[in-house]
Every structure is written in C-alpha cells, then in structure tokens.
Length: 222
Image 1 (cartoon, rainbow, N blue to C red):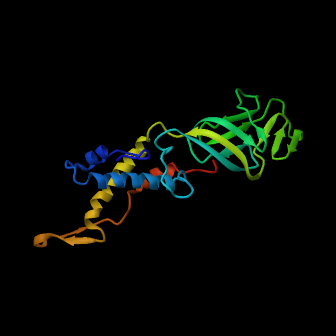
Image 2 (tube, rainbow, N blue to C red; image 1 turned 180 degrees about the horizontal axis):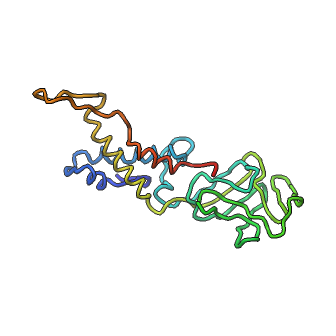
Image 3 (cartoon, rainbow, N blue to C red; image 1 turned 90 degrees about the vertical axis):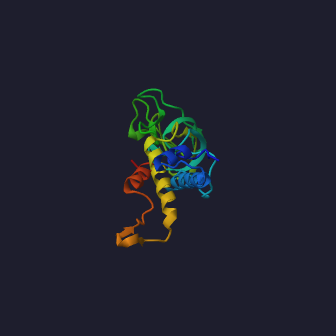
C-alpha cells in the first residue's frame, strides 16, 4: 500500500520503466517507501530515532513542536523547511510576537523559508542591551540567547506535494534499483556467441539525483 511519505507513485515508476504487468507491484512499492525514508534521513528531516514517520515535510505541510539551543544571534534555522507559519516562538520564559512591519520588533520567516529572524524595533541602540534569564532585548528588539534547549518553536513546515525534481529523482532511483535486482552482486556477463560483454554499474544513484537530495538537506547556516 502507498505510504504518506512516498515521494512518487507506483504508477509513475512503472511508466518510467515501461512495465505493464503487476507481478512486482509490491516490490516496487516497498522500494518507493524505503527510498523516501532514506531521503528523509539523509536530509536530516526524519525522526531522531531513525523510525519511519507517518508524515513527511517533503510531501505535505506538517505541524512540529521543537526545542533548540539558542544561537546567540538574531537568526535560527529550523529542522524542517519551507516554514509556512509559526504558532509559538518562546525564548526562555518570554513569548516573541510576530513582526508585522519594518521597525516593529518580533520574528519574521526568512525569505528562503528556512529560518526565523528577529527584527529590532525602531530607534534601538547597541548600548540598550538588557539580559533577563534566558531572554535578551536590544532596545525593543530580541536575540536568541545562547543556552541549552532554551528556545521553543511550534510551527508548520513542508511542501504542498513532492517537488518535481525530488519526485523525478525517486522515479529514477527506484527504477534503477528495480532493474539492478536482476544482477545483484554481478559485475559483468558474457553475451552469447562471443558478442561481447555487458558491464553493470555499481552506483546507487545517478550524480544528478545525488545533487538533488543534497539541495533539500537541513542547513544550520546561510
């Protein structure tokens, strides 16, 4: 059965490979889900315990409640992106409001959708720094004060359907590995009648798919 984390569909993979029969449908479906779970882990988006989640931000918009170490800066990269909305940002015991305009102190979702940035209020000066517990204000602005798990973020993040490049990558990799199962452990095969030798590739995926997956990795810096 299809899984909610799947980056592509059985029908799409069969169309890519030109398969008409249904004999190996379950094998292909299992490969789709396994590869989708692999991409989650490799991009740093899956559960920390390595389990397969019921939802994927690479396929749908998912709600998260997470804690982070304060960075000591005015920017915090979240585990999952693109960030769609934030319902709570709390530093220490202080809830940070959303900034509605330039000059209004509060948080904003960065244009890349990967981080939260803290705006300072109009007329702030560096000399106006005040630290109270886990919370720092700069004039009427804010900072993610350095600390251990002192930032709480409740937010929604993810794509509305798998991005086309990731979906195509999944189709190609699943199709490749489906074909490769015919010659597991085999490097070459002599053709009948001395017609030559067929050599088999030993890679897991094409280089373009490898680059595609790397693009969607979690970043902790610009």
